[in-house]
Length: 144
Image 1 (cartoon, rainbow, N blue to C red):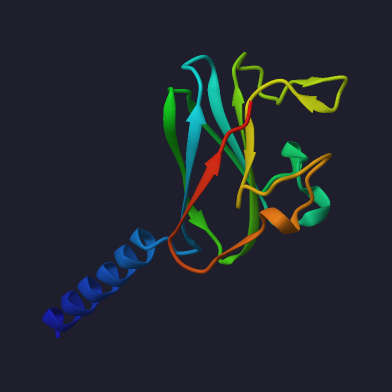
Image 2: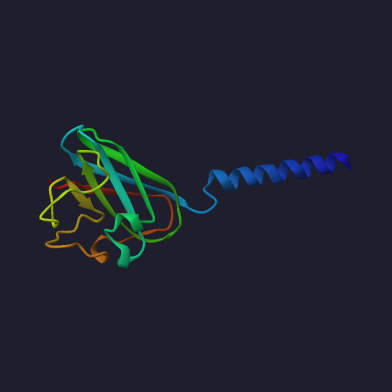
């Protein structure tokens, strides 16, 4: 009887470890950022699930950053729930935590959107939206 309890406890522990290792609530999302011009500052990425909050970083699902490095930089969220998302990436060269803009509208730091849509004016959510249903990797090109 005691062996049965130990065996069942081990099975429970194994299932618990597998659930947490696989991301109990979600999957990984990796963003490969291409075209970083310098090592100044950080590369920041904001993840959005709601078109109404798109481009409002304070209302993003999650924001991550890493040190800038010329060429390609990768950022990853390890636990994203399946669904429809859009990503905004920018090169925060002065490391102030925001995309600098001229006249409050025109980006003065490199930026990019998921799906790399061509836009003029404030970009909408839909052209940048993509589905996450399993481990996902996307590429975003920065424009300076």
